[in-house]
Amino acid sequence: MKITKIMIIIWLFFLFSCSKENTNPVNTYETVLISFEFKQEFSIEQLEQISKLLEIELEFKHPIDAFKLVYYTKDAMGKQIKASGLVLIPKNLDIVPPVISFQHGSYSKKTDGAASNLGFAALESLYPAAFGYIVFVADYIGFGESSDKFHPYHHYQSTVNACVDMLRAAYEFLNQKKIQYDKKLFLMGYSQGGYSSIALNKAISDLYPSEFKVTATSAGAGAYNLYDAANFYLNQNFVDYPCFIPYILLGMEAGENKNFNLSKIFNPPFDSRIRNLFDGTLDLFEINRQLSYSIKILVKQEFLDSFNSSGEEEIKSILKKNSVDDWSPKNPIFLFHSTGDEIVPYSISEKTYEKFKQNGSNSIRLELLKNNQISHEDAFILWGASTINFFKEF
Image (cartoon, rainbow, N blue to C red):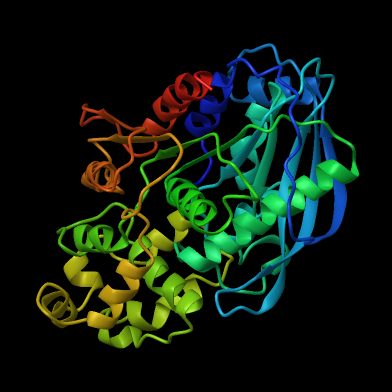
């Protein structure tokens, strides 16, 4: 999601109480940290200036030190690569702070999605740190140190590799710097970040339960079932964000090592235009303007007919493989969605909630904003306020 004033406001709600419990630090089992670099101190005066610019008045509690981390991870093919992320350390604390692993939203422009280089993705996580929380933000593969690669958008294995190794690198960094932290680990994210938070939670539960213990997870408006999301988009007459259709396909290409024939999916001139649009220089709004908001103008009718019948099995299989809605979470999860969401249908969160319960999870909550006037972006604020109330319980 592109940062706007309304999106930044949410983090001003991060005023819930930190635990004062100082417990044993997290022990990671793999050494992945390559280097760290001090990027910038955000003074209280700077934070106040940002707030005045946004016409928001709040008294901030802590300046922040921002560090870029470079670490080893693996791409979906198992090849070791360098990745990066951001660690935000609040200063002048009189408590031992817990950790938030924050998974950022959707970006296509390389500079926007690089939290470690203080792009827009960093601003999503700046304010909770200013109120006393250590925050980890993975850039994801395709941004920051790995910007030479295409971002495998919503690809499960690529997402969890980057996020799990970011946790390892960040805890290594804290231990090297002798920075105290509480053992509580919260996962949170909205939109793509919601998907990524559930994916990370699943990976930890399945593969790393002795290495990390997630206290609770909050996920807002995520496309947890990619097939359902694609089916929704392809069966609309008009969509507000046509960019997500090719972005998902290209992301699956990158993650699954595929090469889709876009001329069989998209009508000209879009079929030959799409790959250049996602070269990392344009944001999602700029890409939208180079596409069509009409599905029948953008996508070939033959592909639509095939997708809606028994065809396109390869694409369908890949979408289902990379969905994260059918497992049994072990820690409390809060799902949030607006019924007025024009980007990700709220039925995906409803179905995910039901699947989690059917699979035996007892600590799953779903909050739906039953107001059709509240858009995907506007709901971001309300998700944040509800997340705070949820995290307070722990």
